[in-house]
Length: 576
Image 1: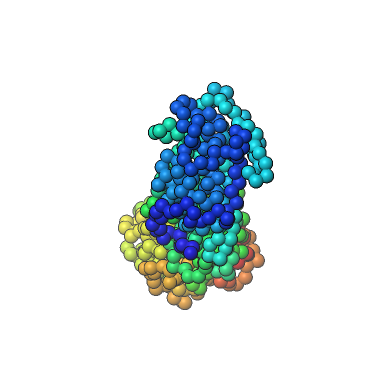
Image 2: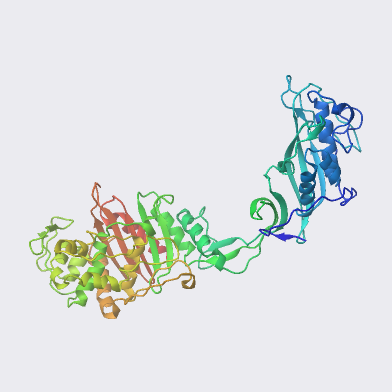
């Protein structure tokens, strides 16, 4: 009966020649009649003249190959094995091929053998007819060393209720044995070219069904269709494929190694049914994300469901490069002002609290900061105006309200101080919000510079927490498949209400105006530009939410976020 792939099978010993019987096999003897005498169908090496010392001739090679292949095809295993230089090993291998391979009948056809090393190469003849219906052309008789023969095997297989025909090419070599007789030099590759020493052919069910990775609606996801998911699909399948039930394995013919482990699949008799590994991704949103970053340089985007943190889409402009969307580590620039605003609101400020915006400013005689635009100045500005217009100085001058740990304490409520486990690979230390020691480091972190780093996944989560007040650790597969899930306090409904007002202000009267045109009252955004040493332009950032979805994007070395990353975010939100 068929065997399951990966189950070790013991070597079958020598059996009698009549075990299978000739009646069930079609033996196509293409070599018969090469010498006009009906071939060399003896059970010993070559017999008679073939045993004479000296170089082999093409006739001797043809006669020996003919006898071996005819016996093999006819199920006369012992007779075929006796025509090799290793009868016992050949008997076991040919027997196993029939039994383990579930071969019910066998036919062999091919071309006239050509001696190797001939001084005048022999010209291959056309394929001959069968022994029952005709004769073949005469073979060259040029003396030579060992000779080779190419042939084609057609095996009829039956296993697990499935029948199939398997055709493949193979070859053999004929040489003298120690007595001077012409014999087939035995190697497992005679049975099939994929076989090495210790290997055998097995037909049976595969060890496991294949695993299809699907989106949340059951649509199969592939790297061909969604290039940015290539690494993620492979990673998820590797992590969680064996956790999924269902599906049926292929029925296949495959190489089994000597240690019982499965090797190369040679023939699939019946395709199995793949089991389904469902992700949180949405194929429609993913397609929009792939299109949105296409043609950009160093761009990544991530989309989340704001209510549960499930990841809807991940895309990178260079799918074969760094996964910027999930694994990037860049200063987030002014998008970090969402977290900073939450920290200030928790310590007494509100959207209408005074926060003068000067063209340049510092704190405690420390580092001098400027705004993206030298003309940005408003002595009467409040927190809402500063946020909408992304005034750096309006924020850094509020640093004394936060104290040494205030910003990091609020970042912890956004889940930014604990590494996440989202169900696919992300940096082990991210998020990992720094401690903000020192006045200059704290003020830098308040505007998304200094030692704080993020990626679109992190900033989309920040926008989602701001929109709902609750933190949900992002994930790309079912929560039950992920060990070590974390929790964080979130910012609560009051702070969330003020953050939504600030982020809505950026759309109606701030830096996100235009790019977010058409989004309603249930939307908000924040732009960002982050300075990077050695770059001619800043990295452009943008994060926003609309309805049930939050999206963040970054474009490297691209300038202002509203013109570089903003259109990417808006395009994905419109498709969500």
